[in-house]
Amino acid sequence: AQRVTQPEKLLSVFKGAPVELKCNYSYSGSPELFWYVQYSRQRLQLLLRHISRESIKGFTADLNKGETSFHLKKPFAQEEDSAMYYCALSKNTDKLIFGTGTRLQVFP
Amino acid sequence: NAGVTQTPKFRILKIGQSMTLQCTQDMNHNYMYWYRQDPGMGLKLIYYSVGAGITDKGEVPNGYNVSRSTTEDFPLRLELAAPSQTSVYFCASSYIASGTQFFGPGTRLTVL
Image (cartoon, rainbow over the protein chains, first blue to last red):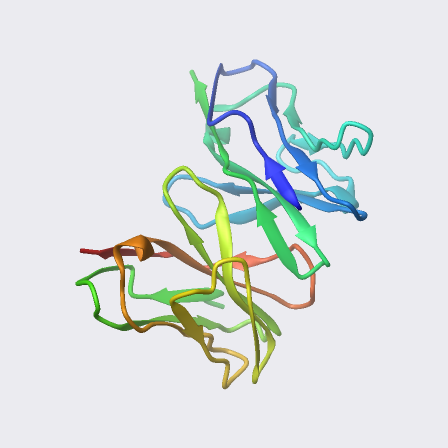
């Protein structure tokens, strides 16, 4: 069965520290993977998708098919990065399967 | 553009009551989705639609109904509310079948 696992409910770091939010998936086909973010009092929005291979707000994520992972990384966390982050897998390109989310807290 | 709008923002229902959660998008998107999010859980797909007149079940459709008479609107109907339907409901849309979905602000529903 298709599944997305985010093992950390909460990740706390200090400003300037590196950040890695973990995401593992199980899927039998060729996955499309995404990171969505929800800042406080804002709606859920797309942060990045693996197929575009871009860096958004300093975040990057590399699809590792061998380890079935799609971890989100940023070398130097900022306070404004504090938010809920959801990893998602696209099944047949039209439906998303979400992980349970990781709350990132960046302390000053 | 307002994007995806949802009404109401909050609602408290009694067991057995019915209600409709409204969702409207002004981006001319073909695809629309309804998700629910329970505390500490990810979003789960309830129903989705690939265009006006076409709807299909998602992962957790029981207790809900949808319709899609226009491109813009995708209401979600709860016929007999149950405490298990207490959740935050999100509507989303996308132009094509892709993972890039645009979300509404959510409706927080409590069934007592």
